[in-house]
Image (cartoon, rainbow, N blue to C red; front, side):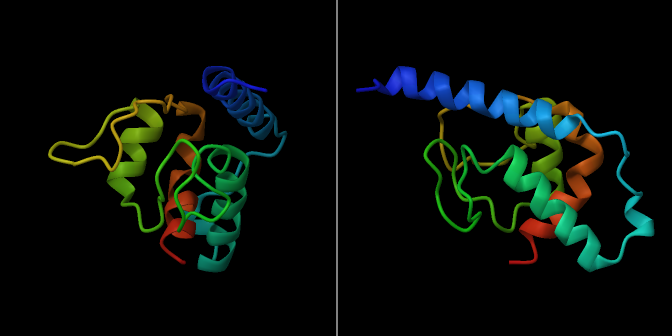
Length: 120
């Protein structure tokens, strides 16, 4: 039986591995302006599945094992949480766990992630 602590370490290691694999691409993402809204949403869904779903949930409308539901997240919140691992000024978090790590390598993917999370 896996203890909660061991399970969290496993999920953390899995998240890091998935993030690294997601970052290992030879083709840089297209600029936001060059993509249709549908392309942006599709790209955002891929970013979410590869980098966020392990902790939040495969369905961003539902709570995850570690992180809260994230559907409808603002661009500002995504930028602060993903790049800086902080909350925007005045933001009241849904959880006080502080489990999320900064994922600054996703900076250029935030507009696509925002488009996906706000398309549901």
